[in-house]
Figure 1 (cartoon, rainbow, N blue to C red):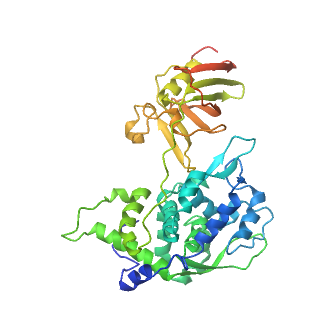
Figure 2: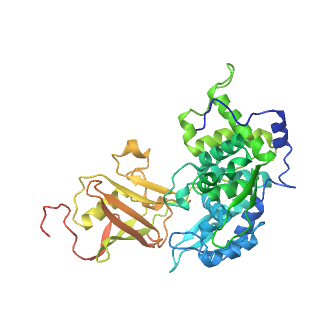
Figure 3: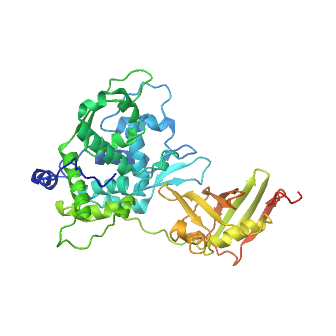
Length: 423
């Protein structure tokens, strides 16, 4: 819960002093800026290999680990990205900033840096860079980027742990059930990020073969105490505003929307730091009006190659897919994919207004997503029958496309749309 009757972190003048005296240029909190910079240096200019699920390839992990301020010693035979909580956390933040893109044009996907966003990042001062990363983690990150099973708010998980730790004390971690639960809440990657951002200091259990990364002692830093006290003070003012306070910019329900919550809190927090003037803002991708060629498949042996202009809406793409497979259009549908930050996204049937808050097929053009060769999505049609068409972008051409979608090639007989049809 965000709103509580009993604040654990109580705001006082000493907290204000901690925040206002922080010199990001000389000694930023934690090691997040150094380690994030080391990761960027490794990625550019050629990129780093990633798995089909777009996590760091196993053969890159130890190289990354050794570049970090505090590399971890894992006594594991085949550690994956999740075995390194610090790397897993850095990857989550990296994708949430928009600095990284997955290049799917080759045979294997590669994680690259977006040169335009990198220029914007390089122009930030240390205070702005620190809060840009904090904003990415607590305001934009979605844990499905690193774990498809998790959808919980990372800020809620992190702050809930900090409150529990503050209330229970360090001895709380000595209970085996608590230690075991850290994997799930706040998650080892979030725990590592709390240290990277300087909110915690963590002493690890000496490496033991087969056990991996495990905290032994945890302490809340003065910076972490002050930052959390400011947030709880912000919540308290939201819940019980002073009689002469201006109209709140955030409602209680908005607290559960990470971006709105962070931006409104940051508006008050920013006054403590003279050098924090800019954020890392992602420009909207330019429209790609040229021909987009999709391969739409119901099975390996049943597919259609469809060409459509980038200026066409997703409703036109949906109609083209259904017509290519001889399906009628009397049902709802949705396009499911990952956005440029790696988060799950959906573009739905025009009649799904209430569910999708404007991300509707007749309002989004194909060329607005910045699709590249190898990009994929799933077109789900008829939520009762649950037909799933796998879509792969085979080409994105600069030259103009025909006004109407075209079926360039068809392979395999389409199955009957309804069970009572002959096939």
